Image (cartoon, rainbow, N blue to C red; front, side):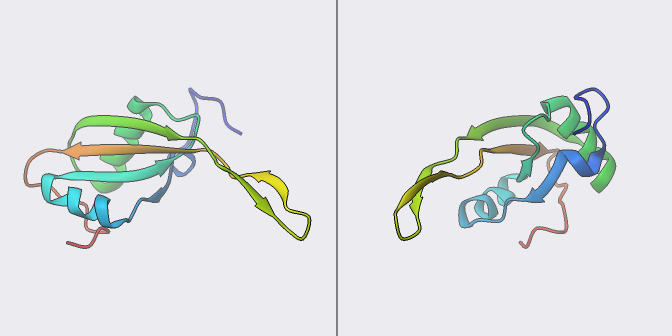
Length: 101
């Protein structure tokens, strides 16, 4: 895994977070991404600005801890992975076209 200071953009933004709630937030110029657990707010801001050619005003972050689920015939416990989600607020009127309206 790359060091925190020298992380490449394709290691920072993993995928867009497309849910009913996040699509509703796009009307307020807020877009959600699943990012690497090592990524910082500053790294996400720079990656989004360079990748999508937009101006980022604010970045908020949250870490969703993975649940313990029981799987298999013997119902062995297994932990789902943790996820880090960052919401990026853009300048008024700017959009990221990969998100449906």
